[in-house]
Image 1 (spheres, helix red, strand yellow):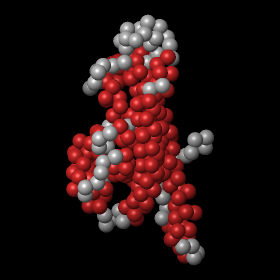
Image 2 (image 1 turned 90 degrees about the vertical axis):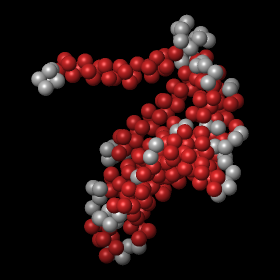
Image 3 (image 1 turned 45 degrees about the vertical axis):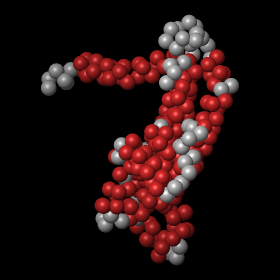
Image 4 (image 1 turned 180 degrees about the vertical axis):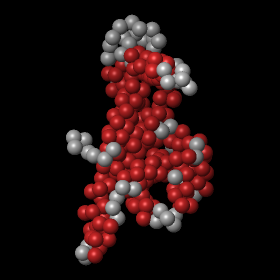
Length: 263
């Protein structure tokens, strides 16, 4: 235990962990600016591969599909997840089993959830496509949004809701003018988290997209491209996806600490 208290040793362990996590990512980002066609040999700085992405129809189509899926599923998951968080928090003393069911998608492995959704859609004879990917992402993101919003509601003083009711305000008015302003930072944080998870998600989309290019998302496109070898285009595309994810997660964490940017 005395050796663990050594600041230099702890700093070395921390540096080793961060190097293990971020050196491969840093190499990927650096090689995305590589001028040469070989993805692993540096031949000079260039942004040509980012320009090449704009002329690749398959990538642009996949990017558009990803944006549609992420935006629509985020809106639906945010609305449903926020309302669910309110309901669960109000009934927290009576709904322990309900909480377990709600948060199960966060614990269940993605492959299990993907197979379950595929079986469900097949049972209902639903034609696979972008709409099934959206619905699947709503199911996947719902628990995450609910969890973020509930963390905010745990510090909420519910007596002001009772006061609003006593003063004659209806339930919708109380929800919009009392509860929603308090929840807003967490709602936005949950939405950003849902958007990030939707952009990055591969396994569920792969199982529920069906056949055809009309429902291929960016992670699926990257998987299809990387099967034939890593190219600088893949490095550039992965860098952009990673940058979007990092920005959204950073905003989500900042908002979840209780304030809007700039406050």
